[in-house]
Length: 195
Ligand code: S3P
Image (tube, rainbow, N blue to C red; front, side, top):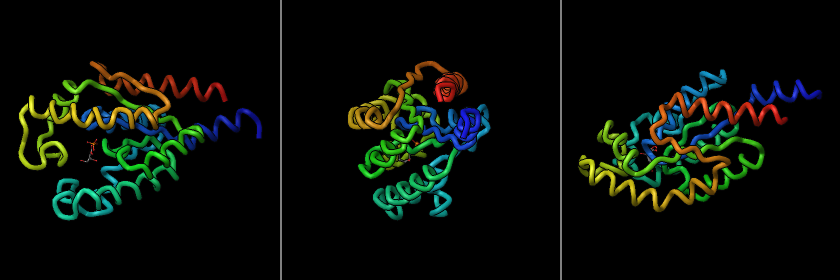
């Protein structure tokens, strides 16, 4: 197969995975990036909800976190078998099975982007959608300070895990989802041009 065919195939079958904590903008960036690259936007949370026929808070309340994690691993595996821009749930990296899947995908050339943000920024964004994240405000709606403290705990546990699966880290800071999508699209086109 010639070089041009290789590139065409790589672009058509592209898979890009976004990881990071809740509130890091994965779903919005995935939609924006997928639009730019003419790919499907895939969201593992949405896939889990449609497979279960329930919202995430309902799954956590009814079947528990372990059932949610089981469904999430199934959907990640299925998504990695296809193509598109995949926004993952913030806890995807807590399961060693998922980390192995992501590291394997990265070794095969899948671009895995860790969207990094500070606990203060994440807490502010999470507070815009109260009650949506059982691991933050499953028991009761937290104020900004309590939310930030919880995010700091999760970030301390998970930052090394996001780093262990990522090909690249983007500091989202005050960037909009469209800005982040632009940065990833540029990284991606550099990668394709090297094929
Ligand atoms: C979770 C993050 C959520 C969702 C679930 C658990 C987590 O996804 O998967 O509530 O463990 O951090 P988002 O990161 O899309 O909010």
